[in-house]
Length: 476
Ligand SMILES: Cc1cc2nc3c(=O)[nH]c(=O)nc-3n(C[C@H](O)[C@H](O)[C@H](O)COP(=O)(O)OP(=O)(O)OC[C@H]3O[C@@H](n4cnc5c(N)ncnc54)[C@H](O)[C@@H]3O)c2cc1C
Image (tube, rainbow, N blue to C red; front, side):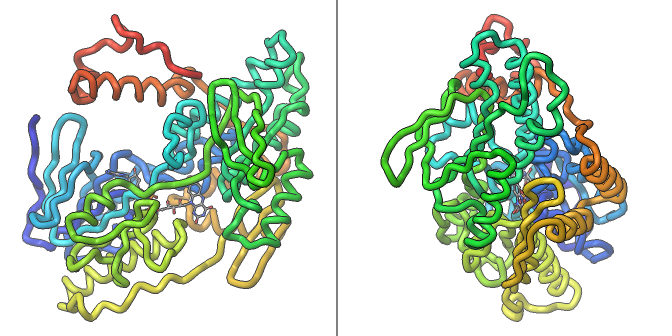
């Protein structure tokens, strides 16, 4: 395999940022016009506004509105270079990052490293559930969920067997955190509002939306009162909220859960299942922690120092969903503020000669949490203040417009939300076979690569997909 070593070595302090999510992007912006050379490496070409993924999944927003190009965002920062590649290895002794550009390695050396590779979906050791219940972590996930949801209605419309029809019209969301609650709310709105007049053989009002959570309430971080309120609003919208219940099996046919109070098992026949129950930090965290003799927690988050550095290495910062500092939550604000803190510390040391020992500990300023449940209805928790209903919805709207990247995206999202509030229609319901099958097809491709010990680019170049091999047998 060929490899490149860093091209831009102009004598400046070299900063490498892994990941252009909230942590990485907000760090990179702080380096504007500073005397450092920055390289951002991300495996995707876009900065993803994850909190709005469920709106792509349910046809309110298009993918581009929540995922602007990293290159475009960084276009006016001359000291930033963007590399699209997957970081597979970091050598903290050699201060080197190895990024796989699809068959070609890019070797980047750094003076300072900011690691912000985020977290992936966790199935708590039941990774095989993923085949039938996609998580909600990427644009691909959101588009697949959209294809599964719209596909379920299409199949129900032509189903002859009433049991099969009801299975197709049953949607199960696993996990009652903000994502699960928001998604369940939107699925209910789609069934009872958006799609109401669009089918002839089925009544979409008969759709069953079930939200299953292992805990005693939904929205646990929001406290009991708001959790109860959110559950009540969902139930009023027709969502069945099943609490204290652990999912024990997910198959093509449906979902089985165990009621933790009675120990009874229940099966919900369902075609479209969505998993939003847990996260685990990027494995890069453990890889770096092991080199620097530092622990990780159960979710794979690195136990960082109070200046977000790792162990005795002042030049490696881990921010956002990958780090554990006083159990701060895995939310966008923690990542943004962490990225900005790390960048400020580096600039202070490069430009003002400050010493790493003089860094003030990172202090997180909690701006509150919010979740939208339905049109005009959101719950907001800000320190001790709890707001819900229309006022909460307006607060949600303002904050999300503020933090979206790019004027056009704000404008288009604002218009979409306005139109969605007054009209029943959704304009982003396009769904393709590729969206439906690509994830499982890619998994099969990876298995093939592993078996034949070939890298993706070679597989892509040399094998005609599906030719002579059973790669079409993907699950739906
Ligand atoms: C569906 C959903 C809804 C959410 N809703 C909210 C909400 O309402 N409010 C809130 O505050 N938070 C919410 N969050 C959490 C919030 O999005 C995260 O806390 C935040 O994105 C963390 O930022 P980060 O920079 O650590 O990681 P991310 O934003 O996840 O960014 C990680 C980046 O690293 C890249 N990457 C990963 N591995 C590699 C690698 N090996 N090589 C190269 N690049 C890599 C990824 O492509 C990605 O761009 C939500 C999350 C999800 C998934």
